Image 1 (cartoon, rainbow, N blue to C red):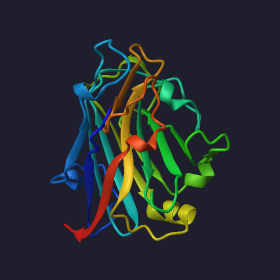
Image 2 (spheres, one colour):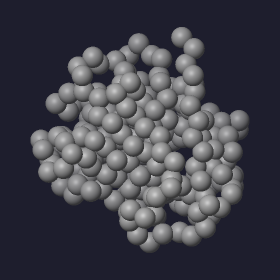
Image 3 (cartoon, rainbow, N blue to C red):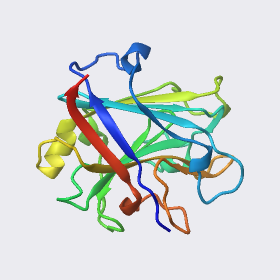
Length: 225
């Protein structure tokens, strides 16, 4: 099957933001989405919409997930746990696909617990970061504690700030990306309704997000807006 790859251009802003959860910060930022047509593998009618926005500055990358999901299930509370089993969003990225086959998997459940790894496809030695390895990150969830059921709203949010230096140290390359590849996901392997959504469609018989050949294109604009 020939899967059409989507593209997202991430705009640049001049200033870094102390409170990057403020509504005004995200105005006029182009969005992409995981919608009802984006879900794969399970035909159970559970297809929560996810709105995703990104921008970057000289130092950081900012992410905003808005997930229209009234009920959640969260069991994983330990850094590096199996967060994909919970109500979870994910961001996979390879900033330099022409130089490296290694990509990052950034997986975060609805209370902000992350699992962050890097490596090639099917790499048995895939590296997973400790909490100390991402101490300069900021992850701010709207839901602060474990839940199993209604959380009191019709959506939940997750805001992230990731220093560019994190990627630069790993790839030993300045973060100046005009042709990276990435995908965004929504999942919940052990939630009430098992579900797998993807911004860029994954053509696989079984659920598998670790297939960078199906990542879309992501470009970080150098024009300040």
